[in-house]
Image (cartoon, rainbow, N blue to C red):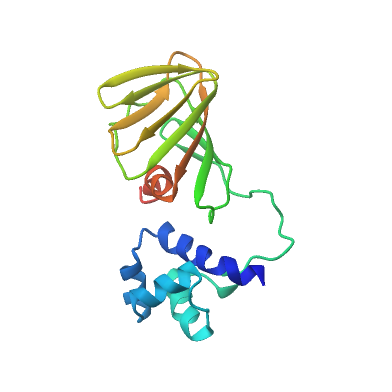
Length: 185
C-alpha cells in the first residue's frame, strides 16, 4: 500500500501548486484545517468522504493522488519559452523540489529584480551568467554554483554574447513565482 502512504504528500503538493494554505483548501472543501493537515501528514486515513471535496476543489482526480507502482520515471513536461529564457523542467510537477535547465539568451530585455519566499540553488553548465543579488553584481562561469535566499532581490541573465545554460533548483513557491506567474500574461 505504498500508494496510500504517498497520498498525503501528493495532496499537499497539489494544494501548494495553487498557492493555497491549509486554511484556504479546508474552507473550500468544508472541513477543518486540522483534518486536512492530518491527511497531508499521513496521520489520518483517507476516505472517499474526505477526498472527494478536496479533489473537486483542486480540480484533480483521486487517481492523480495515487501513483501506479511501475510508473514511467521519465519527466514529460513542456519546455517554456519566455522573456529571453528557455526553461526545460527536469522534475515532475508533484515533486517537492523543482529542478530546471534554464537557458538565458543574450540580449534579452532586462527584468526588474524579484523577491519571493524560499531558496535557490544554481549551477552554470555553459556560458556566463550575470547574477544580481541585492547590491552585488556577480558573473558566474561554467562550473560555478550559487545558493541564495530568494527574499533578497535577485535577477539573472546571460553575460556576454553567448547563452548561459544553468541548472536551477528551488522549492514549489520559487517555481510558482518564476514560471506560473507568466501563465497569467
